[in-house]
Image (spheres, rainbow, N blue to C red):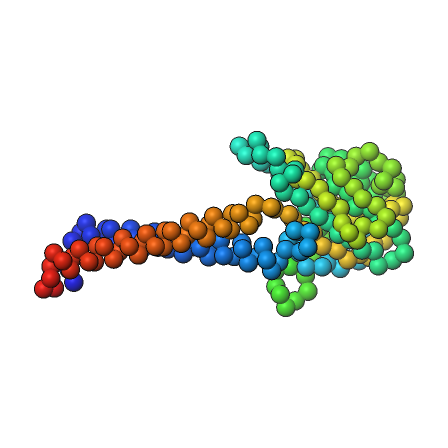
Amino acid sequence: MRLSAGKIFVVILGVFILLIGLALSLGGGALLWANVAVKDGDGYYSTRTLEIRRDAYAITTYPARINFGAAGIIDWPNLVKIKVSVTNQKEENLFVGILTESKLKEYLGTVTYDEIRELRINHPFSDPKIAYTRHTGSSEPKPPASQDIWSESASGDVTEGLTWGVEEGSYSVVVMNEDGSRGLDVVGSVGVKVPIIFGLGIGLLAGGIVLVIFAFLLIYLVISENKRVNPTE
């Protein structure tokens, strides 16, 4: 079967559209699967449970820089929420808080704390691996709940989790003993809640299916037309 240059171009275009449609369908299907299989009862997609033992006054995450850019008109704090759930394996009550990078340095700048710099939790058959940066200091922190620096915080029994609607800025999560004492032995997880995941998955899947059908029709019409014009080939 011999095709003209124009028809070859249309077939290549059809294959390209087909690949895009398949990619969108797979992405949409993955989001819908996650919406059913990964999401917990409160609607959060959570990490595996992490166990952390550190001889420090606090454990913090590396500052996350959040910038909504042109999408700033969206009400992100109500759209995307973060949940930090922590259980103390000692008798002390815990404190979990979220604060800006500048306030973290002001509060913990002179005490010893560990900052999580790398977290690898992707491998399903091995334990999570955490890399820390130790920040050393010579003083003791004041009890965290007494400080008016937190964007959001929870203390006591925080097993059920601290929830926070994301905002623009540079933020860290801080875990401490409620009294500010040294030494932490905790297990916990971090989750994110994005209500639009289901709708986005439906949209991607539907759009992908439409493109796949269109690509098949385009290729079929070209081949059929070529057979009609050149019946002996």
